[in-house]
Image: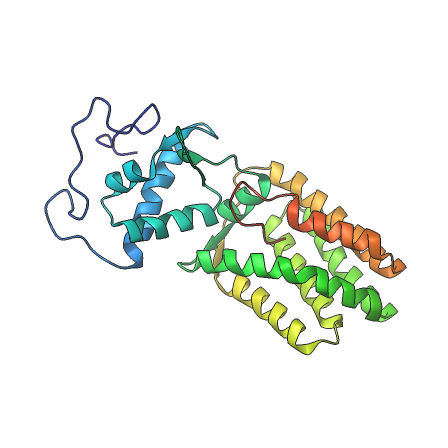
Length: 266
């Protein structure tokens, strides 16, 4: 964090500091830049603050943080959307409310530490939410239409996921997982549903610029758990056990939701 940046962690952002430059102007007096770069810059500045506090700690009010970032209300709202999509902050209304450092789950750390996304990261978060909403429809279709050959194909993807767990490779795990979900979508006779779903997967994968080393090894425990969940889901499809399959897909899409942030991609 900049040495001159106000402390937003205790009671208010400007205790013991001079007031910052007026919103709408840069500190050196040049006109404020516009466009997505301003929102990304504001999001990055607040992300630095998040790294300096404990999970769940208050960062400040929305207005205090907007003033600190020297951006318009609209630009700050877009920055806030980016921060929430990344699972970095939560917003609480009312007295004592404001922005708080999020308590990040392993899924959020996987998304933030392992997958480097481009400037459309917020669009990826929306795609994940829609994909999750479509999952139960595809599971219903798979229960009715999966052939023994289809189930065998799903198990091949599970084997790839298991291998990634054994090799502690969360990146390979994520890609194998996407292929498993695409294979489940391919079972559906509803071509519109399958096309929409695979299009969402393509969007998620297409905006993944690069893959970085995982920063925290507990992620391997997480992907091991997710492998087990997907294995049990395929077993339920094989048995035509609707109740168990629907229970598992609900667990798949809700267990690792972080605060107000998006669900994960695996």
